[in-house]
Length: 329
Image (cartoon, rainbow, N blue to C red; front, side, top):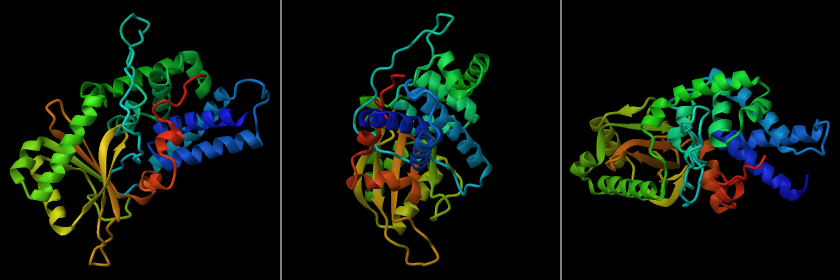
């Protein structure tokens, strides 16, 4: 395997493992373990293309990792680890035909790293998640998917059908991260921050939908809401009090998981018993009326590591190429 081929395989595997786990750190670990196995126990015929073998190993490791994670206790809501995807919007999605001649469900590469999509995948079993990603994101055939997961083609079809059924709620409210959506989401996020800064209660009420949800993920490391905050009045009260208590400054803007986001710096708490994360990522999703329906906050150190480290490293989208990872097989 040449250095160029190795880098192509590494980027592809990272994109696949990140979508499987929703964790950049876990994806890095899975890729490293996959290549370690390639060194220690390579395939019998190294003259054949490496990708099928590498994908099979990585997907097996990822499914095992998901099963362990679901058995573990997580403090508070779980959110994906944000990763910068750059400003490029999704390439146009094509709609392949299913066997009955109707358009098949297809998710492009940028949509498939969005928070909404990754959270919907959490409802699936590890096998269903793997099948859906290979079939509907990476466009594997039934035969290729069966080979990658070491299961029968009949099992692939059954798992795929069940996975798609579980994604119906997501599909019904699906808003893909086009350039227009990115721009409108950025405007909504700016208005939200401006309303908090200017103490504009009426502006907040007009901007948020009645059933708006705020989900915070500190991983048990820092102070955060231990369950989603639901309802416009409750969400406004939460941010109103937070803005009063902490003077935040806008540190930087980024495009995380396909949509605009901001990284805020927080001062240390005056109470040593209250642990406040030094940084948090704030992002949101809007509805078709450009009102905010979901707000995400991530402050867990491990989840922000890759996003915060982009000033010292090449940009993650260049390193991992989540939007165009090279899908040749």
